[in-house]
Length: 163
Image (spheres, rainbow, N blue to C red):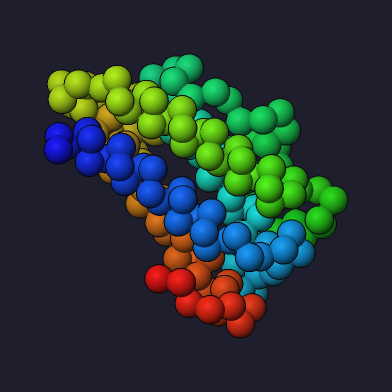
């Protein structure tokens, strides 16, 4: 297995873990904050959709389709405190769009060569991932960080531990 093949396999698995983790939560439960000041799962999944597009397209413009219309306005730091269920899309839409964004990322990653991994990414994204290779490693880490937060929410809601 090549390094790129390994990363592609990881990119496939982490979003599937998100879907499994959130599968039994209702739209109302997706808006529960595990602790005061924490972001709810609805906002976090929308944020992942927006971030995936923004980060990958910083490396290669157009590699991933832009997020759906309105997502950039709904999933930013200013909206993280909102709890209005009418403001946000439903869980099914969010997970579908996360899957689409990740599929596009995977398709792009499969086209890369080992030499592409050293290509630099322009500011300001270079602070998060200075090269394409580092971006490929950072994307699953970003999803994994949010996945851990979803596990805490599951515990608050009394759901069984999955992993």
